[in-house]
Picture 1: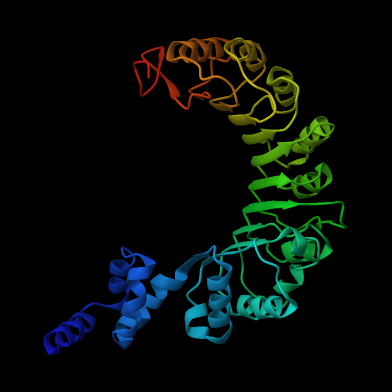
Picture 2 (picture 1 turned 45 degrees about the vertical axis):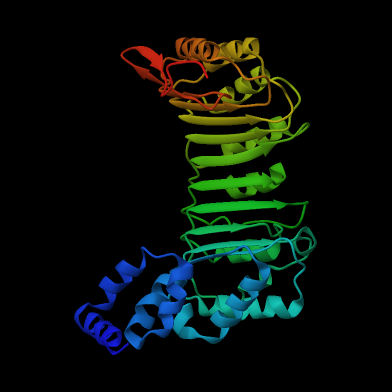
Length: 345
């Protein structure tokens, strides 16, 4: 035991905290916890590694965590990224107040992910950001889009990536014109077109992930024209029952210079014939390099997918990479289309 302690003292006296921290970064969180109690030098280095990036999907553990962060400035100052998931539990007012105190302590926070239950998302919970001084670059939440959230976002000028993934009704959500001046990437799942438009309008967003629903397809796609810069990357999850061959021209009309397009179709089954037909719609894209198409349907053969890749490339010569429902990544090699698999399953 004495030899072990002497070794610990020797190591901690020779190696600076920064080197110890790099070493500890290679350990799992569960392996680091016991080291916290070894000695003061190790405790300092390990606490940095343990608390820098935190992700808790268990509500019980998340509650213990925010209690610690709310009361211990030594640990909270190390936090750069935190992901808290309360989606499967109802949150009391006392827990929200505790969360507010914890967030106030996270002065170096740059990435924040917060998920609440549908019941809690129906209420105004964005007040938990009152008194917070952190400056985020990434923010993800399921909370509703309302006046309180808009006020918070207006105080975060460094955000480059924003994800609003909750089910949003028509609340009073109006962003200040100067809010989110550096926003580049926006993702949403269940937002109304009005909310998407509010986020994109006048901001340099070049990457968007969105869902399309029957009756709102054209209105939602029109919001893409509100960005201050050309949209280069688009991901769409379509709940529309019309075939994708009807959707692609609508997108190409608005974003002819799109470079990357990822389409997930949920309500329409694909066939080999439908995939070939899509090729004609791709001709309208002038700079498309990467495309992914996923949809339910009978698995296509290797040769069928290759023929689709060749047809799409002929219609859209700028294509460099194609991913089809079989999951194979097709790319050009020696003027031919190939993938990492060269035989049938």
